[in-house]
Length: 324
Image (cartoon, rainbow, N blue to C red; front, top):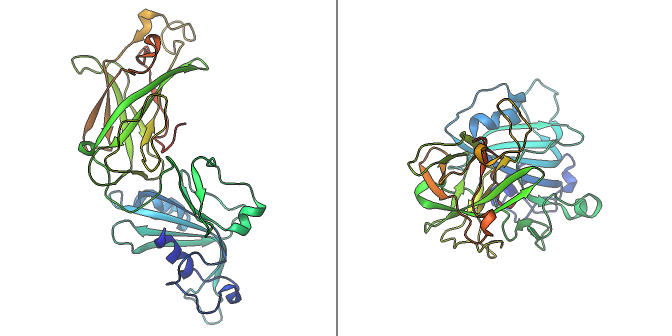
């Protein structure tokens, strides 16, 4: 948050009169010309699509924060004598997640301003909030501070600079199984059981395996939305409940159709002979190792206790910090 505020103060407004007297990049809070500020955690290679027209190559092993500021900006740039400053309403700054140093930046005029996919909203100017639609997060997920900053509520994840989560720090449970719209799906809740907060990034691999460890479903990869803060010493989440206040977890939702999708009769009801019931779901935590999730939702009714997969075909959406 503080890093984004500093970048905001460093982006001079088009009208110098917008600066309150005496305020500069060391001032607390947000400058008045900032309408919104959002951020994602990603690799430098992925970040380059948001600056410079996406033409430059980046470093796929380097973690960065992409900070997007919407407001009224004027940047001093080099050029021939008489050229003026660059102006725009969308400033994008790429910052090394380890050192905090700027690596790349871009300024453009876009109407309406484009948002970063899967971004965490850090700030929305109170004046904008009064005249524009509210953020997409629900009121149960965010709370507004007196300064107008949007901070994490019960399970919404805050983007922070911290160590990436590894498999040995995490555990996961199948919490619930439900049926809807010709689909069966379950909630896998990923918790941080180590003594240090960590950031879940990258992708989570998912495959169902039988009692011998042999895969009996297809393997899928679910992207992590932005960077998800997982708080340390997370306790198990009770069945059909949300995590306690202040505890941040991640939700992965595997699902399978209730109809056949392959073979000679696609679209037919998935019979018992078509169904596969994995003993365990194996999660690959962004290449750092795997964790096993028993295919048992103990708190669910008997008929909903295991996730059955039609013809071994399974999918999984984005890993998020709240149920989806």
